[in-house]
Length: 458
Image 1 (cartoon, rainbow, N blue to C red):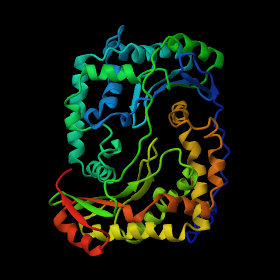
Image 2: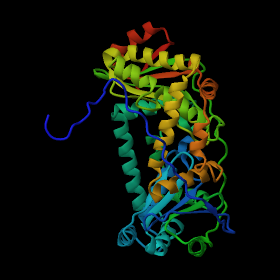
Image 3: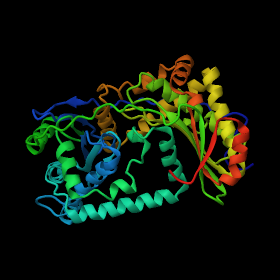
């Protein structure tokens, strides 16, 4: 062998894990305004950038089914123009400072954000206040956005994965629970919404009462406070606070629902039930429990269904935490002929971990993985601002993310097992299969896991 000697690689065992790198979440400095706006400032000086976010108690969960999609529509319309700037002029002004407006509406909040260079912070804040406080919700913009939303709904109905997600939500939650519907609404509700609906929603929900202003970046705290007071201090209004979302299941027993797509060569499978709210005391143990079950590439579900059985390219489990009890869900796509065996193996893994719990080795690996990747999602001002916004929405302690990795490291096999058993009820799971009913119903019935029902739509 010529040149530098290279030691042979021992492929019989995985490489040793490195030590977890140190990381400190930036301190959060609270400074509320007299109008009720809760200000949260965090300094990050590694780059000359600043992210500003206004977080409002204006999510989709506050709306009845007849108005579903209104929060998303009203949020998107904030980019359509204001009292002083048309939509095009607003976009040009934002582009002039190298920025853009980002509006994100979820079940619990609407967040309006922008990121710009730190020395353009005042201009950015002025444009943010212009878009949010003086939006006119032009009728033509509402019509355009509504047409886009309706087109997106039609696309979701044709996409098997999206159809499976929406069907799973519908079959997990009763009609009295907003989570039973898609986040962006349904055709029948969106078709009735107009400019006045958007304006009324904004007047009621886009208010400083219960809202938060998050600013993260290379800023002087005193300067940031002064600018926020100058641009948002006169913001007025007291909207209706969102109440708790109670969650009732559609069925009180395990059911198998097949959404028929004749001729489909693949099935989209969702196995789920009502989970727990974001403020559950089991949050950290559940993070570890889920990583062992199906939240990581080396999870039990992946090792079985992908590596051992070869049923799927990927399978995941997840708790979607919200103010109310969001869903727990296992998701995968498999060939039609292995749909029933894949469902059987997924249920076997779930029931097995609930019966015996995760091992010490599994928990240790899960803790190291979660703690190790945690800083990777907090490298930018926008990412940190999103986490502080989460603190605002769910009324978490200000040191929640500062102590996050320590809380993860405290999880034991017994606490993870207890959290899983307290949260997941296998006898109430909804198994939803979007695929060819002719090819999957018989094998699913043979599993004997619950009544099987075929539907063409919901």
